[in-house]
Length: 186
Image (cartoon, rainbow, N blue to C red):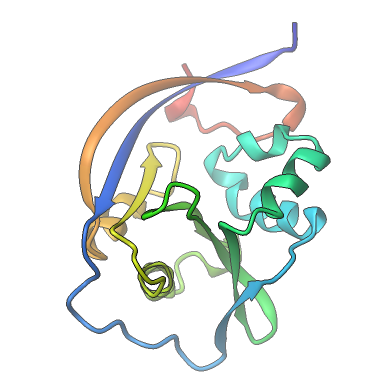
């Protein structure tokens, strides 16, 4: 049996049933978002591992490369990278497999971009990207107490509404080498 660290979090599930009524502010000069047309496993792991390192993002780290490649090859899954002056600054992932609902699977900033004020604008870009798909009926996302403290308020500010909360205990493999904040250790 593999050694693990037990992590206890409260997960908040959110939903948005219509696009925000206000117009989103444009990304500041020097920023752009690019959708990867065929992301490689290595590039995806770089984004996921770097963005999620401080927030116990562990599930995708446990997937073998072949499974992750199969996931990324699905036409209903899209990966969008935020660049600042040519350097990755964050990413988001949309999953449309449960059409007409779209799930914002992952959203986050690289550590150097946290605290710069780009988070809300980037989130609105992700929300607007999802709603631009014809026929979308709802957008969902979840966040947990291992995520950045501003994640939940930012999701709510962008138009998501909490639907429910659940307490989860994860067995995070120690081989992943993740820093586990004390406040989520079970």
